[in-house]
Image (cartoon, rainbow, N blue to C red; front, side, top):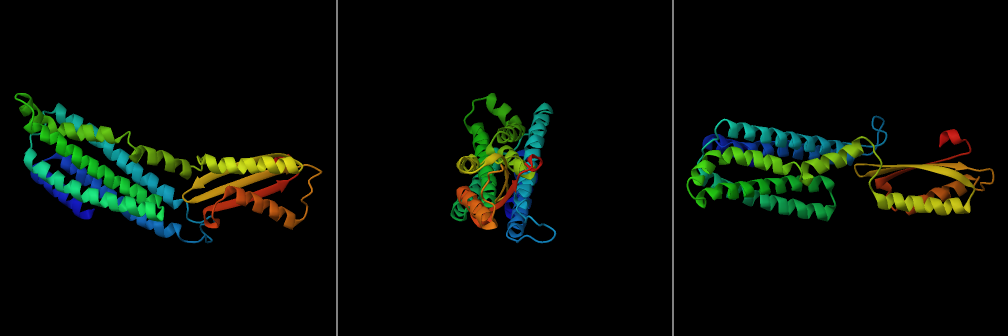
Length: 288
């Protein structure tokens, strides 16, 4: 990625092509993002300590949000930069060299994307999936740029000369605009900001299993009401249940209450290192 970033910036400056320079900037941001991903992967694997008593699960969505935000800023900046280039008269460049470079760039990005996507499925890593998507964007960027400049060789005059003059600036604006609604970075930013802000979990399957089990438990025991708080932060689901029990509630011994917790844990169906279960039993409505 460092090689592609330096190569894109160097070739872009040599050919005076804004679209290749934009690709180089994107590669630099992706390189920084990969470094943050590696740091997050190491931190997430650490156990909880005195400073981070809930562990380091929050680092993963935070890193994903930062990287997605940087990509979003690049897309917005690239769009306005391309529009400004068109407004000021365009930028005539050599299409042949740009096409050759982007073909080589597409081959490298395609191989990297295929490899990381395969590894992400094998180890079930969201960090790898996000990094693979960035390679996919780089591949799409290079392929689309190649096709855009190839139009120079098929358009008739006078459209060929007009497109040659404005192709570089137009491709910068178009590619930046096209990447705004794709899953990266908007969807990743939205998904991970929900986790950073500790919003309600979107895992409807997990929420449904917990609520179904609670309905069965309430039918068996004197539980007046309950409230649930389920959020996902990184790889960890935090599940908090507050049960308001009535006077006829029979599970008075600790071992009986532990069996109740084990029953809810089994319903959640999450590995012990991917969930944090907290259950509060109270007869006072203030604690629910």
